[in-house]
Image (cartoon, rainbow, N blue to C red; front, side, top):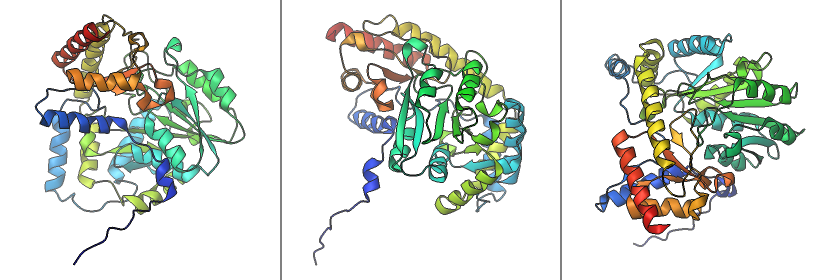
Length: 395
């Protein structure tokens, strides 16, 4: 017998779905490693430290205690309670457990926000360069993606006047991200208050991506949910991956008004059913337990940032501002004369340094590259040496 393979006929919406280039570059880098090439991984946004031991132990004990079954779609009550208490304290707002939704990673909150709130033709304002899933999901739903540029001359802070000029009657959602991926820029408290004033009393929701809030190096993080009148118009997105080095645990959460949280729970029921229960028990320990390890990680990322930025600024063709949060550097590479994607490919293929083109984060990322500093000082220094050697030969 023979079989005939029929043509794959995807829904048109699939052509509008983007990707996260970091994972594509990681695949390329792994393939080069299989060929025997030594690669320094500065492409993926993942802490290289281990999950804190107390959190691992809590997860192991949860498995042994029978947390291997379905849980509530919205999350285990004990984790929702712990998060509600932490967010109440850290943001200075009153949060109830019913306003917390536990999801497998941070991306479902982006996905659910768009599905629940954005109609075809609505406008969504988002940062550019920015996390690529924002634009991908906007386009997927046939909404209009409206970028607000993050410019180096403004220290990659959001220009509130420019944001204000983009808001109109079709604006349904505004996305904020601070500390920011890929630039490491932050939105100051004054900026947040000005953004809130620019929105005013319009019927616009805000998705505030605060996944790197515990990795702030300068100043104190400030959420727009803390502005009077904005708690019910804000969806806070954060999670455990970056703060506690728990990327593989797949544990994130959203904080929002209770009636919207109920709709997110319905979306979860229709997609993932629930988040792994033993992971959530580990999350309770992460929130309520000793915070010295996360703080140790933050200090180490700041030390690596200082070393790597100093080194980049000594390399011909590279100039880099000091990021104020997260674990990324976003150097300007225009003086190399190379387009971002071509340079990123060359550094990977020629000298085994895996970074990302700035264009992986939107059109305004041309002229930049993103390097993750979630690697050891030894490897970061070796990466600097390789890049410098490459520039001496190629520039």
